[in-house]
Image (cartoon, rainbow, N blue to C red; front, side, top):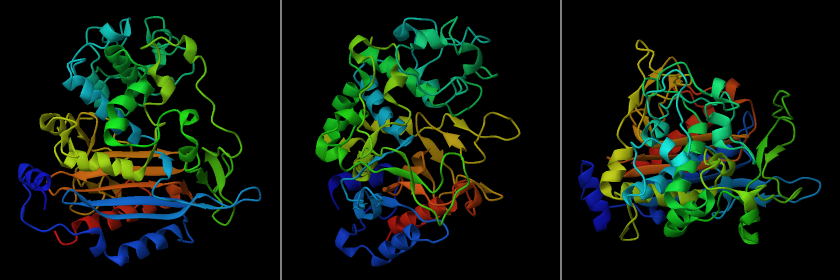
Length: 438
């Protein structure tokens, strides 16, 4: 056991801090067999899967299964590899949080500042104009904003033109409760945050994230697929569903590409960047869900968080920052009616991270594995399902990306959570392996 592991477990109150760490060579072959069975399940097959498991701060299992590109008449099948990049949907938000906290630590911005001062216009809920909108409220989804007006907007749209006093979506983008009083998950929060970060740092969001997070942590990928090196672009996983448009799923039918099928058409750069003004429209870059990275990059972030912010012996975040983001800002209370818990999936939230509190009621809830609490983020979009979750007390964690759905997830509900059954099963397998030998 190294010093980082020992300090991490002692800091978070882990019992048995002198226990040995299981190496990759000791990993059980049973997990690989279970994962292959999950991918090949005839009732709900999966096109591709990449996973990583951490135990006591160290990687004890990595595996890739299925294909990043499914065979078709015009293209041979290509396997998922350790270097496959997935468009990770809302797990992107967790990565953005890392960059934002580095700006906070550098004194470039504050979690409790009025974001209007950065944006150059007064951002206020029309019915609660005396309540300032802050990064803390945006990160904990208590800003009052909703996605009713849209998630991201192409240029020449600006946040001021969208959300200002006479903004085109201002009338429908805000919910009915005062900022701070109600939780409602909102992707648009991160478009606002990306804009604030640009002004605070004086750098375009995609470049800023590369400098603050990707390069220091050795991460591949990025927010702009057109800027990926050829060898990385060739590794991007196509996202699939076994359905066409809005037709019913056909499990016996072909895999239908949803996004990132760059063999048909190469990725295009964002329009209008030559005239882009920093802070005017951070939604453009997809801070809510457009990042493409490897699962092992998510594992790097998980290891850093479990090591109290240290990466390869150096401080990436301060320990107090790691503890802060894992501090509850909201917890669902049905009687109080204090939030939309998305059918039971969202039960508690910190400063940018979901807190999984092991709650299950009538087959709905956030229970990822019986008795397991965790902090992290999930992602769902275009058939993809992804997750990065850590258990700071035990030093364990999991990361995964599923590149598509072979059956309607609404018809294959989890037994004790609001997740689809295949994702609930996957998390159960990974958490069980993380706990082996604990």
